[in-house]
Picture 1 (cartoon, rainbow over the protein chains, first blue to last red):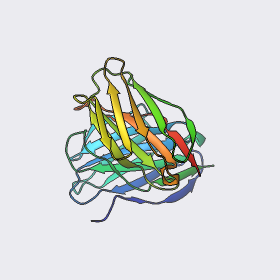
Picture 2 (cartoon, one colour; picture 1 turned 180 degrees about the vertical axis):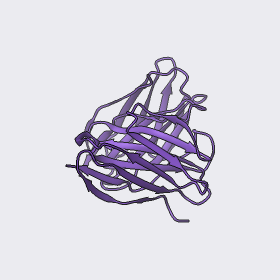
Picture 3 (spheres, each protein chain N blue to C red; picture 1 turned 90 degrees about the vertical axis):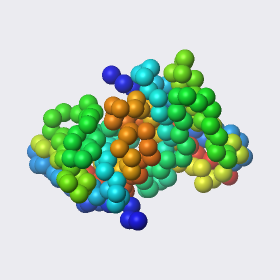
Amino acid sequence: KAGVTQTPRYLIKTRGQQVTLSCSPISGHRSVSWYQQTPGQGLQFLFEYFSETQRNKGNFPGRFSGRQFSNSRSEMNVSTLELGDSALYLCASSQTGDDTGELFFGEGSRLTVL
Amino acid sequence: GENVEQHPSTLSVQEGDSAVIKCTYSDSASNYFPWYKQELGKRPQLIIDIRSNVGEKKDQRIAVTLNKTAKHFSLHITETQPEDSAVYFCAAITSGTYKYIFGTGTRLKVLA
């Protein structure tokens, strides 16, 4: 089975722009969650989707949004980019519908905001 | 809100020694506690997890202990090897909330 795939792997944007990141989960996995990873802040939970429904979200401003499609692929969008949004964005998929199963992470999308 | 504190942020040990990483969680309803290992430049991977109905779990050289009363849990690595060098993240999840709260990570360096 292919692993979790994230695109693009690297991108550079300027302040004020917006960005869309994509995540394809492992085949058969219906839960996708997103995380922001920065040095010193660890993995900060952004949101979780299951069957196209957002079931929870973290403490991020409304500039961060996401969605999930019927094939379980997910996208996240960040609008009006700020310098502090520079980070590695990881998505993870889970085989089970509950939240106590193993998360399988992608390699991440590294966003640099200039 | 929910919070997980993880200590230490960095840890250096000699090869063959033991390493202990500690996490404290705030939500008393948390009932699932996984640990993820992230090697340099790679994706995090689950190494061990424990549920609230168990006090300790072992898998070869790694073990996790849970103290629900004190709301803390720890990762123990014995006989450390250079390949154990990585960043380790703890997490606390309250089932049914679909919200994953991770600690800030511990960078473990095993010195040969």
